[in-house]
Amino acid sequence: GQNIDQPTEMTATEGAIVQINCTYQTSGFNGLFWYQQHAGEAPTFLSYNVLDGLEEKGRFSSFLSRSKGYSYLLLKELQMKDSASYLCAVAVGGYQKVTFGTGTKLQVIP
Amino acid sequence: SQTIHQWPATLVQPVGSPLSLECTVEGTSNPNLYWYRQAAGRGLQLLFYSVGIGQISSEVPQNLSASRPQDRQFILSSKKLLLSDSGFYLCAWSSGEAEAFFGQGTRLTVV
Image (cartoon, rainbow over all chains, first blue to last red; front, side):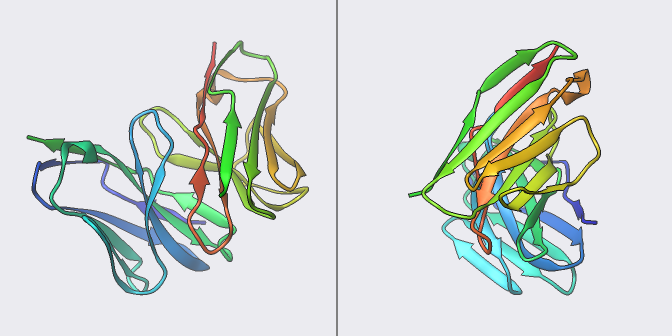
């Protein structure tokens, strides 16, 4: 099976940088996704990593190390609207199966 | 463009009653389809996934079942709901080597 771990909660200050870590143990790994989910809403896609390294997309970046089973999501220039849960998800089995971690609830404070 | 429809948005059902949640996808063919459940303040739990018509993989033993009668239709069902079935149910699709797109979800309350 898959085991995905993320911190439960984090707090950061508006304008700062925050890094949300995700570790996973799985077989048949194909790729890793990060999603953002505001309370009561469906998750929305943020980033996707297949190979080792850093993927940058505006204020958000995501890093993957396949050998270490480790990823992080980096959020820069934090805004109040970034307060949300951030979900790490792993695709296995030829992308047929996508399993999510429990998510990290980020609170951005003034 | 691709869209995913999921209904109803909210549902209140008594214990022991049946359930049917429907999800349809437009603008793509042969998608991978998923049903997830999210309990209050928790992550997404994968319930079922399907890679083709009539092909259903179940992730956890439970009171629920899923069916895929058509290529772009995915149905989540129960014959008799339990209190523990309450939660936020999300349908999603993906084309394969790409991200999954979610429907707006159904908030189910079993009373």
